[in-house]
Image (cartoon, rainbow, N blue to C red; front, side, top):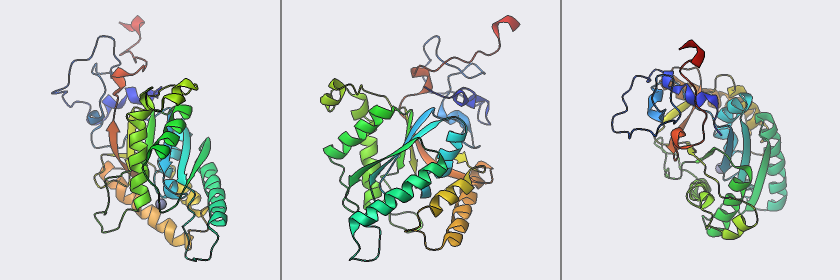
Length: 299
Ligand SMILES: [Zn+2]
């Protein structure tokens, strides 16, 4: 499934770009209103306009999704998308006290994440209960993620950019973030779409599913920016729900607003979230409805 937004993106600022090097589409494939198949590069420099009907956010810890793509998720949900959140760990090492009970901390953090997910508007949250700080991109984790993907059947998956180890500004990307991102990508492609991967899943009724796009957040090289001017304050509110992690909510709110503004500037909007976009299946290869250039009666 795909939203109608996908079919009008060719009218954006980059709509006149040539389709050099692109193979001719099969007859009857979806087209933009200018008569060409839509492709991501048609967007031009403005904000990203494609929207998945269903999307899944896969992260390492409670709060990652809210520091990450929360405002994009809220925007898409407001526009009619359905979102689901998967946390690989429950953040049981996210404290400063070695005597703290990790299971009690996990319980607190799951409750905080469920509250934040309600604020953003997700249809639900899954916790995979993997160990915080020791997440491994192994077959058991990939099987769990494939199970989630084949159950919810998203058009797009949003996850950490696993290729970032050190950010340009010098910050270090947590090992669990890199691992969760890599495992999510491996689960999307090829495992979720291959019925022979974890074949007991298909045999038990979880049919193969093709996720068509990956949106990698906190990228070192952003490719698209989603306009989140209308939902940035929901992100701030969702982050406040993580009370065990947020010690100065006012300072955090200012930081989130500053980040939003910084990412919005290149797209010409007040606030944005940036992603590296991986289009696995283009719209013309999927069962997207055609948008006619004009009603047949007017021709
Ligand atoms: Zn994290």
